Image (cartoon, rainbow, N blue to C red):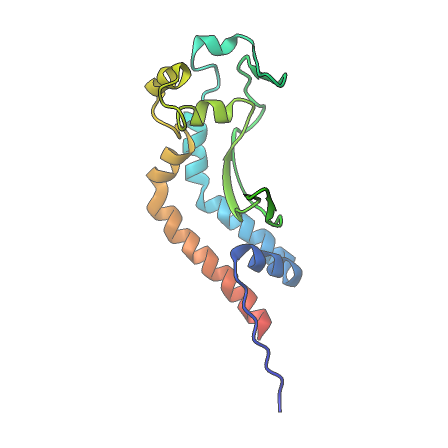
Length: 172
């Protein structure tokens, strides 16, 4: 006579959280494997991210109504494009969910969103029309991913299977 336990993990975040309690070194290896899978995307995006103001007017001061100094153009120190994993719990506030991604590639820096996504909501704004010479939104991350899509998708499927197998072994 034995005891049978059935457990289902409904998401990759839950699996990563479970794996962290079972085998911390394997959990760290998962992060390393992910970074290796997307290293071509990260280096491609990093090469496309501007180090200097793409438009001359971006060197001038621009403060938002709330007082945030959006411009002049500043480039963050170090890498502008990073990859990683997140075990943060998904939170919801006023219908908006936060911390949804388990794996991410992030273009960061004080002006990253301004350059990468301007024109997505209003393609006819003056700034959007000026930035259109650099391509349509997303100008950095999405094109870098698209160039590596097949390899990233194939290897991510293998990584997700590895996570599922590791967690499944410990639930038996």
